[in-house]
Length: 221
Image (cartoon, rainbow, N blue to C red):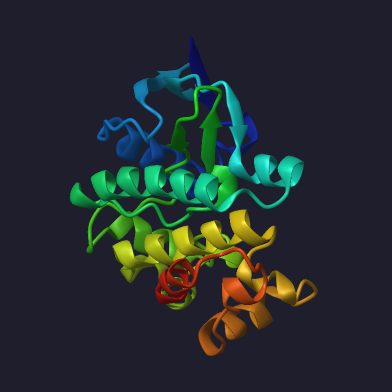
């Protein structure tokens, strides 16, 4: 089975959407790892841009968290461990995802966790296409999981931005909300200021059964 991702016709006139789709094709096509959804084909047919990927039967981790609430500590850590291995592979190839969050991580029925959506991926430190996306005001990433430096200059971030997002994702799986959700009514600008000036609460102050060493590790991320 395969899944086919198509660029909607209404987006064809948008340079940003087309650039995102093309960079996802470029990133996914160059990666081969059990923790990354495999891309098998891509192309254009009669003005339709498409990307063919393996079909993963399951739920993304955002839906899992909504349905199940906070996960068992061991289950959350195992999911994040698998994602970390996939990111290690991507980073070794010079690719930074820049949008790691629960909804971009698929949990299959067999228990595998796979990274989706490389539409915001940066392919090298001097990625001109990435810089062009940010100069037109595109917010590169999702605020609740975004590293502070990514909010300031998304085109210049490195692998550490993905590690921050991975830590925020683990926080969500353990607690049931992302670190910034303590202030749900903030405007995007206010959230950006909060990112730059405040540390997230320690996860062990919100959940008693989280080991101290794990809480210290998440705090470092």
